[in-house]
Image (cartoon, rainbow, N blue to C red):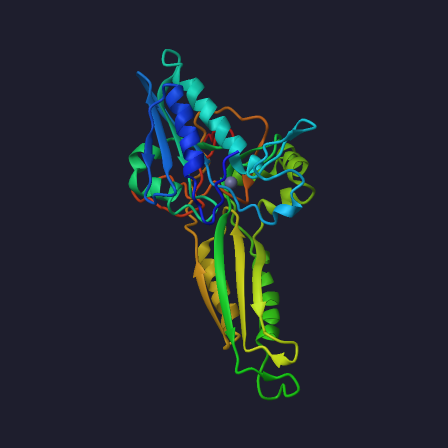
Length: 357
Ligand SMILES: [Zn+2]
């Protein structure tokens, strides 16, 4: 297996391996590298007869391996044990990316049977946000990579097809107090205590009720869909699909047990389902933070534009579709003549029958 941890994000070995495969298969491709160490690969086939444009998307980078001593099989071993392939990024998403490559290679050879366009996009910056990966391609090569539908093989489960993505709303909070000796709490508030109260207040975001479009509610609410989600992702997964979630991913405060902490930093990841307006969330956060004069917030709000699930063919896919709480990141379908390079817009492979109205 090739190593492509991100951060730092040097994926050249993986990209070269894929490029070699495409060359040997006789499939032309371009290497687009806004960052030299993070090359993206782009291949396109235009069939003779006109038709829709299908885009395949996968990422080459993977999360860092972490503590290698905790790996049962080495992160780059590629060991197959008891019918399971072990290695860093096997699930997220070397298998999915490989499937896209083979799909592209196979379909490209069916020029007489297919119509439209087929594009393969393999990106090298996904795990840290996608700025130099899908975000870059959408922003700089939109005419080539934005199609009628994008299929992405990110891990889900064999029981569902995911047709969307929750929007990510990342938040940083800094709390500052004078600090002091813990024996004299009358001289300063504790930054950590303020952080604890602030986090408790932020939990109220999870109670926001989405205004879910009717088609989406129908697609996500069916018993088969809910069963598929729970079978693949565990009990409780179906409920999460249409709920705001809050994760306090980082919390750092204080330096010593007998000192009043003068600083605490919090990083929160709020995920917004379809139907939650980012401005409502931003305002709710501002109201909460305003209760704590010692706290300051900075946020990276998402673009929460989404397009309604279109019924291109009228066929309902099986297994049933669910919405994902994770990537594919940075895909945006152009709407209202604008294009976004941020996350959370989605395109749907016909999650519900076409409306009659
Ligand atoms: Zn992934």
